[in-house]
Image (cartoon, rainbow, N blue to C red; front, top):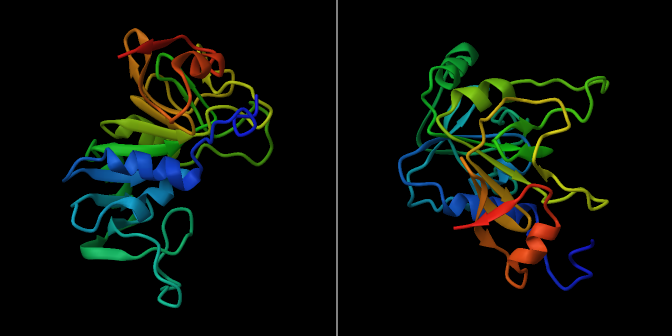
Length: 219
């Protein structure tokens, strides 16, 4: 079902990033994955101390730079131009992954293709034989961070569910996701399955369930 045509305006990429940014607590060390998660840096208020980590070796990454103020050598892991916050530092690539694998990140926010009700994540390929796809650092981040949030569209372009009982795509990591921010809702992954924390204005719980394969639960 087309949500715009049915009268509901799903969150866009920036909207999903802003919604996730709102929930990141003061003082957390956070890695932002490729795609929508990188936009979160643009929505963290400058007065809130959140230390953003990029696996290519930045601690203290800031938002996208203003036009004509870009440093061509200062990029994140997605090769996007970034800025630095006061107190930022650079580390060797190996040390950066030691931060990831050593459990020093409070949170990693990743993009996703599918999330299952037990927290399984598929975010790197849509089949085991897909050419040119690589799992990359997402595997390390998914198991190394203390918490994993996912930002993604609630359904595919043709209306198929992404919030599932079981993932059908190759897994990035098993039972790693604790929260999902979609274009329609915020869902916590709990022992009983997905619990709805927030829904976009104008969309009912029942309408959200109709767009979701997995069973949803109220708070």
